[in-house]
Length: 137
Length: 137
Length: 137
Image (cartoon, rainbow over all chains, first blue to last red; front, side, top):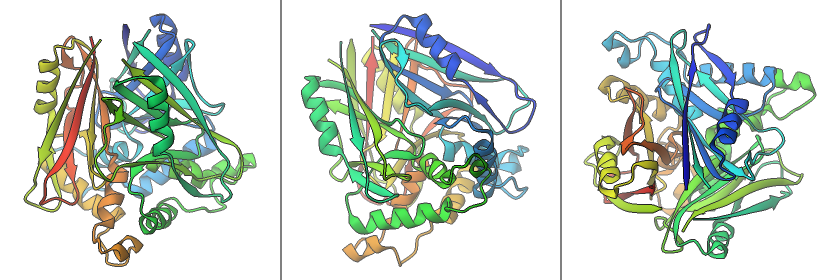
């Protein structure tokens, strides 16, 4: 059995941003030499998410607006008593979920035609990290 | 180490529908001969979800109504500028999440008494697919 | 390849509660002897969740209040026709998601500095269970 671990680093210019990482994950799978198995793609921060959905710019704006409605940035969260101002980013990360597991078949991400992996940043403008761990044979 | 991959196909009659697939997933586990490991059950579309919850018809109606409140079907999503009309289905899929990993112990889904696996269709009436990948020994 | 399975039991005093379980999961990883792999942490009930986020009491209160806004306890769910009164707990569990997969590298949970694993109880005051399954080498 083989394992291969990589870390992807992100410093987004905007506080909230959505970064397409499908090719980076496929590159890690290819590098691993694993033909059959799974790859875990998981944010190492609690104010970011990883999700699989469409690479369509209108939809990404819809997602961003919708997340802001469901988990708005507001001053009055209790978390802000610690000096933080990013409670909304924690909540947004919970809706989106911080990780996905992608199936690997025959050395490729075994995806449907429209599936793309995104890193969702909700409190950016600083260095953050995602772990990519491939596991299989 | 063993791997076993199957694809389940769905064409729901309704646009939104909830299909119980626990037995299909257990059948894939049994067929694999894997006694110990995990099974990934993951939608291959970005307008569908897979979740584990109760097989109770009232609750399923509650879930459907609640998802429509949190992510309503509306004409004014930016995604619809592409000609699509299913932005709400993408958002519903994000809440529900598009995949689960089920533990396998002694050849069986290692579930609590009420856990059932559902395929959640949010933009149906056409052929769609779920990957079931068992991994273990 | 090695597997190690444990079950964590919870009986919370409050109906809704958030229990830090990072150390329990790390203990299971250590006991397994697995140096490289993944650990699945998954609620075996449909009214509870497992998530990774911050161990900060203000934020936990924010999360609890926010979940109650998104999926309020109310009498009028259809699920309650069965005699149950916990439909909101099912919906809360769906938002939070009932499971996480944690990467294991060099025998440790391969986490960022603020990541902590929580068991989220939404219908407690009775015995409930989480499966912890470590898989790797």
